[in-house]
Image (tube, rainbow, N blue to C red; front, side, top):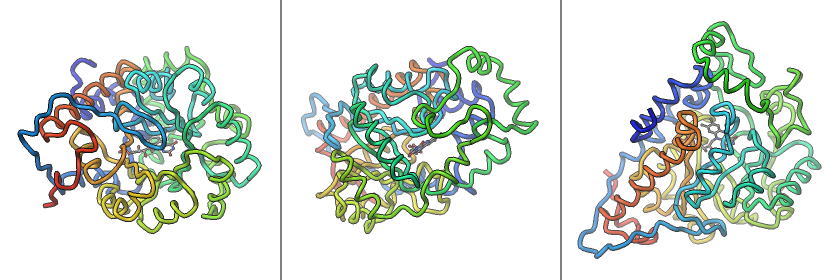
Length: 380
Ligand SMILES: Cc1cc2nc3c(=O)[nH]c(=O)nc-3n(C[C@H](O)[C@H](O)[C@H](O)COP(=O)(O)O)c2cc1C
């Protein structure tokens, strides 16, 4: 039951009970041996918080300004694919929750509700997550579309020029369109409520891409999209042109080194997201948290440094902010809540996280986010 959910693990468990196995494992899994995925959350244990007492905290202000957007929270909902598979309201539920909590919401290129609808229906800053296509005309047309729907921030994902090796999906046969093996089919059969919801609501589609790929008749798949349409040879020059074309807030998602962060500054980006895609791409890569301090030291005064991968707790958020991140993105934390209970699920997850952050801020002796700094952290 939703009311029995108090943390990440509770939402994950409820989601597991509601979703067909192949879909649960698509969210839950990572690449190869999932070492990076596990390390992402474990890395927060490599340092401890040092509270300051008697600082006279009366009220706690969690607001931040990041990439030109004023947010009520230092936490936003990172763009993720295929949300209507997780709950029939998909992005509508997540955007609704983001609006309620006054924070930013990311629409994925592989989103299942159109960026135009989200912009029309929800009054909350919108990020559009972009993949770079071989067809430069298509890139410009899609950016133009995002401009016309008043997207606030363009976020180019740079860690996915090829898909990660997600062996859980290989075992279940998870792909879009579904090509399930017998075991995968059986797992769908054991979750009939999911099937009823899926079949009785709007047909599955990818409205950001519908005009360019056809998922309906099985002629094309997301795998084909990555292989045939995306440009693995994209380089800094290409992205510099995109940044100019966009002419507004532009960030690169998936930066993991200080050198790349400096190059992002050089080509005119206004933000970077330190991220390893939740451990879903290059297994064996360093955790985002382990890279945060050195990247902040290199570029923190020139560009907004945002952080994601591994966040499950309010104290994780505090540690990332204390090291210098301007805001942090959530992935699985809100996706499991979405799968567990739709918008009320995401709202409960956000409410719990905000309460944790607020309580932890008080216990740390901080009344605003900018009070957090490296004096509050000690590595073991
Ligand atoms: C199911 C799922 C789908 C995702 N889809 C996308 C996507 O379409 N584009 C993207 O840039 N990142 C995508 N991500 C990555 C998230 O935006 C984010 O970087 C990551 O989930 C953060 O790690 P966490 O889940 O440990 O919080 C996805 C992540 C998950 C779990």
